[in-house]
Image 1: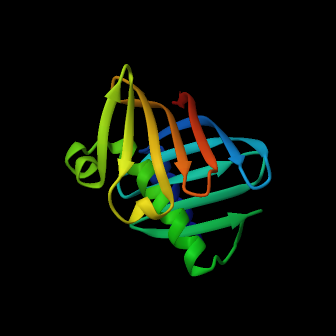
Image 2: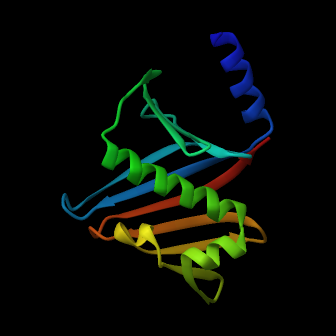
Length: 161
């Protein structure tokens, strides 16, 4: 059975858009920043993030979140799971470029080459705004400003082929 799951996951990754990325996290409470590197893969019904240095993986498939550290599934409390799921669904939505859905969830203002998204739904409980930079239809940078004054910046380095 596990071989079938690995085969399906490998097929999904092979048919995905996969990118190297750098994630910068700023914690206002701690007054410090952290830099992580990894790979992000977008597929039909979700995405997968593999933090290379931290040996952590987040996978969202059909709104089901799986979090692993050192290849072991780590249970998350309901609130944390919901926040991570909303975060990943937002990143997935930004990648998909579904303008109709984006416009239903955000007030969007374009300034120069950046789009400023102000959430108008449930995501507004933890995200103040999002800055999005794209080159044609490819995300180059996403910066999330969280309600607790933390910031998360994802910079796409390059596509993996």
